[in-house]
Amino acid sequence: MIVVNAGGIGYQILIPLSSYNKLPVLGSRLRILTHHHVREDLQLLYGFSSAEERDLFRLLMAHVTGVGPKLALAILSGMLVDEFKSAVVSSDIIAISRISGVGKKTAERIVLELKDKLGVAAEWEAAARENAPTGTERHLHDAVLALISLGYKQIDAHKAVKAILPKLSTSTTADIAVEDVVREALKHLLS
Image (cartoon, rainbow, N blue to C red; front, top):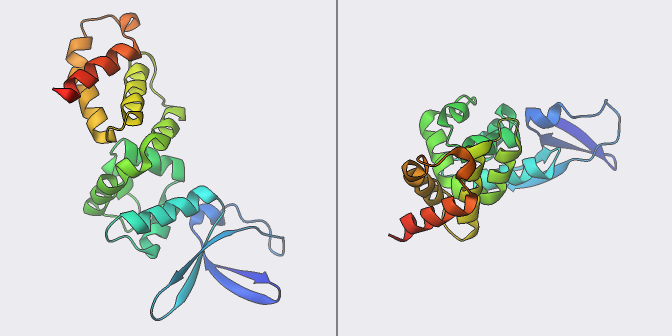
């Protein structure tokens, strides 16, 4: 928790560890994005150093059953936003369940309820990471993105691409084009 002095009034703001690490020295000017949470018995301010953190905080509370502000803050404290989105997109339940306060069932629920909400943006972020797919994996990844942009759910797109892999494995890596993967996946989805 931090206390921010604004016009002579001190505001107590709960922040995740990721925002705490970005705080300037004591007495400096500070820009912090807030979320005002109102309950029957109290009002709390939650603060974030970036819009991405605040958006993920709100997304967790709005779309994941059983996740309130305390657990959403713990999730942001336990994992960077990009790492969390990548873990959700790749269904990495183990990584998510390592966060303090998040068990296996909660991690499964987070993946289930957020995977399609994160959608294409999270897929692109996952692709931009150091371990981005290359070669054939890149074509498969691009095919999944194309299917999502055509309106298919992310999980259905992944399943379709995985289902057609045996057909494509007879080709050499250089021969596989994204268009071929998308075409075969669409045939699979429509059958």
